[in-house]
Image (cartoon, rainbow, N blue to C red; front, side, top):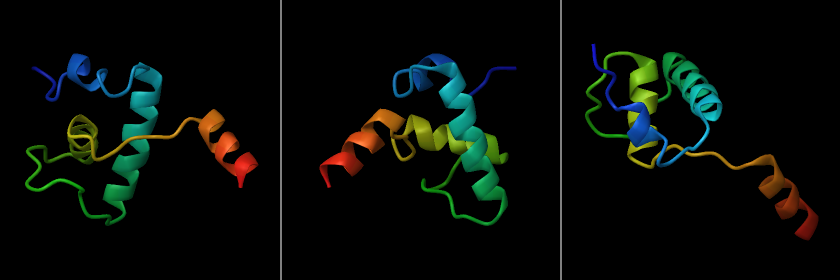
Length: 75
């Protein structure tokens, strides 16, 4: 069984596998609770798969804690 999208293609957007897992799990939970997908016509039937497709398509990303702190300090 082949995972689609592949881990290699996803790591172009998010370098850390741990961050990738955490982000996709959080987004899958949101989808399960009724949030609408950010992509048109997802191919996956599972919430985690839809979350991974959103990452691949650049619709889902994250901000590192250092960036958040810098933003709040300059405000």
